[in-house]
Amino acid sequence: MSKLVLTVDDSKTMRDMLRAALTDAGYRVVQADDGQHGTEVLAANPEVDVIITDINMPRMDGYAFIEHVRHTTSSRTTPILVLTTESEPAKKQRAREAGATGWIVKPFDPRKLAAAVARVAP
Image (cartoon, rainbow, N blue to C red; front, top):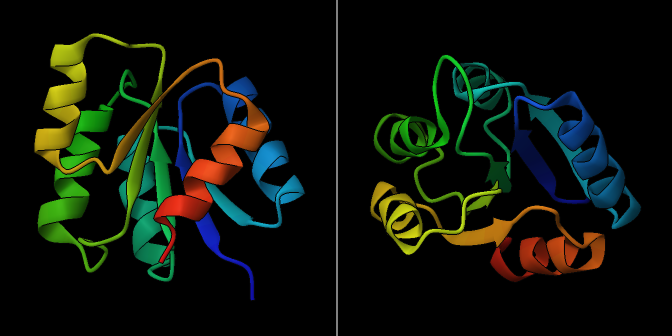
């Protein structure tokens, strides 16, 4: 069975692009529109293999979402890739400290995204 990826992004266009890129690469995809929704989707899908999250989102941003996953869910060891327009070293460091596995800057190349998911997927 193919790996399951949770994408968390407040942009519907970005979620659609992620779904297309990942399904074309053979992944199954579940989606959330912000960090709070991401916690709900993750609770309903504990078999998620990889999480891809944005940082700047309403209700619960990506940092808080990552910290929630790392400290309060059964998915604490699930790889988390940050996909964002942010590229500042301090923000990357903050994401690493929260528990992010890797960082990809938007816009993304679908092949590189799929390769990054394959590298971190258990």
